[in-house]
Length: 378
Image 1 (cartoon, rainbow, N blue to C red):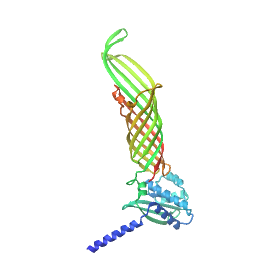
Image 2 (image 1 turned 180 degrees about the vertical axis):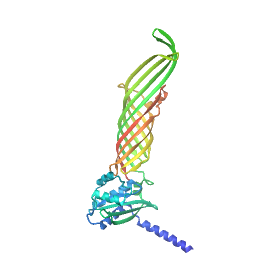
Image 3 (image 1 turned 90 degrees about the vertical axis):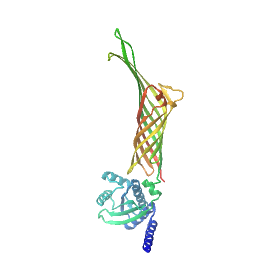
Image 4 (image 1 turned 120 degrees about the vertical axis):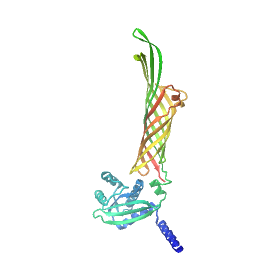
């Protein structure tokens, strides 16, 4: 019995060692796959690297791009350009990381003018990735070659799959456009005499006073992205209209008999700076990444004007915290460059000045970011 157990241990150890010795990194595997197909296919055959099925779009894109580039650079085979594949992908609505049937692959190959379609898949098996690739003749559907590689689950793989230890860092900036809507109200009640025509009445009255402001914000922003978190800063000018309305309604025997009104409008502007943090969760869809986001920011007043006159003194009592929620989208231009757009809606917590005021204030508004970013690949 002991001999049997010992034999099993030796067999398992030998198999694991053999697998470990057969594992290569991803880039080496791609080069060896290109070597294999150069020997299997006729020289200067037109090939299209169609799709690599996987659970990670970025991993699929990387293998397709690198295998295509390797074939192009060596010159022994003729590769269909990636932009042509992207056009057919949009036309026929298939995913580069999804499953594509042999019949669909043949139809796509014909549209691309390819003689051979190269496709495959890569999946995690027992702690390593298994990459399988095959070539199919477009006209006959004959399998022209298959090759499998065991891929080491190293830093490169983790950076492409979002695995443990992968925290790609991105920086960028662009244009910030936003706005805010503020309304503060207060009411008062009392009793006094009111003249209506030639008569005086002992009336109850209700006063309603409203201070409101609508503001347009234009400026710039910068961001530091850590995949699941974004730290952003913005410097911008906010300008708009301040409106004050006041009304006093007189009631005699529960009937309104008189109303007094006052209204005024003024201009206001401010130079503002904010810094914030957003928690986000990206969903990758080919070249597009969508993410919901929620977070907070702190707004600082640097300078302000009312009706063209600069407001002097300490403005820090106007600083306030904003709670924000929304989402965004990244569009990859290249492996490292991407376009970013975000739309957030925020609610402001009252500043120190607003908290001390007899008015009840509520401020909310949208913020849009449009810019470009660069990802540092590890």
